[in-house]
Image 1: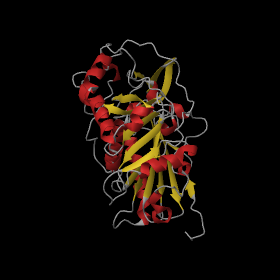
Image 2 (image 1 turned 90 degrees about the horizontal axis):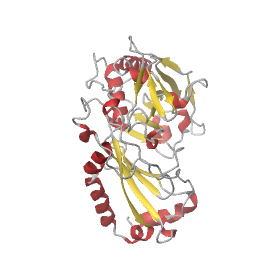
Image 3 (image 1 turned 120 degrees about the horizontal axis):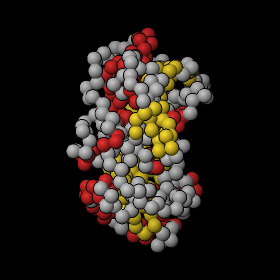
Image 4 (image 1 turned 90 degrees about the vertical axis):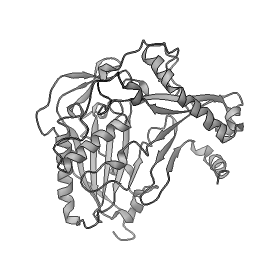
Length: 385
């Protein structure tokens, strides 16, 4: 690519990859956790694979074909993923095991990864060119997984994944992608056998919900009235708490999360030393076992899954240990993984990521404030340098 030429991405038409063998039909329920409003979103992210040592650019076609075959083979044990989400009744989504398959897109960029700064932000290729999109006749909200693999002239790849949070949590989605990678590399079966068993998770009595969430923006926290509520929260894994509830926790790829957080006044958060805020969050996490157990058995006094979705809520997500960085489709593990859910701007968020190799430590992706408050936010961050 010349210095003056903008990078381009040429994409093939979406291809439907069905399971490589026969799969059961029928309808499968989702769990009470799957059906919480907080997870009815699509999660989009990109895995960046630097060129493997000794790999030739001419080998890319074979690598993509093996990856496509890996998805087809993984869809046999993970047959629900080849189906579609449907509504059995209002507010009661299910998975119809249609065996249709997942949409797969092959693409080629006109440049090397180095020409676009290895896809570090700010992106020099629009994110929409790195993500799969189905044909117009498909409803995006009905799909469970889609994949796009983009080849770069250096021999590297970018894999864009979209998955339904209704069917997977992050760890569950990574489990499926690892299985697809294992199948692409020629393993006879996934190293972890998939477990559905959504109906094993109890349906707690429905608690009365408050009014619908308000999306009216608050002012930046330093400008809020002293008594205004601000919330800091994260989704804690509950897999370890489902031992004995699920027939097998290992292999379960549904949602196993419970909201944990604190609510304080703007003044209390603004004036508290950072270690004090961290200590309060740690205390909330330590109460997870009791709160989640109460919720499962119908003893909760309020629905903690009914999270207020407004500018006064900041959520923290740790992507560094979910498993997306350990997926190998046949061309090594990714050097970098990043989320591109920029369109989901309902809640302010902080996401922990692994930095691009060989860097160490963590990388934070922040979507915390609206543009009018960005300068004040940057000034606050500068105090910690």
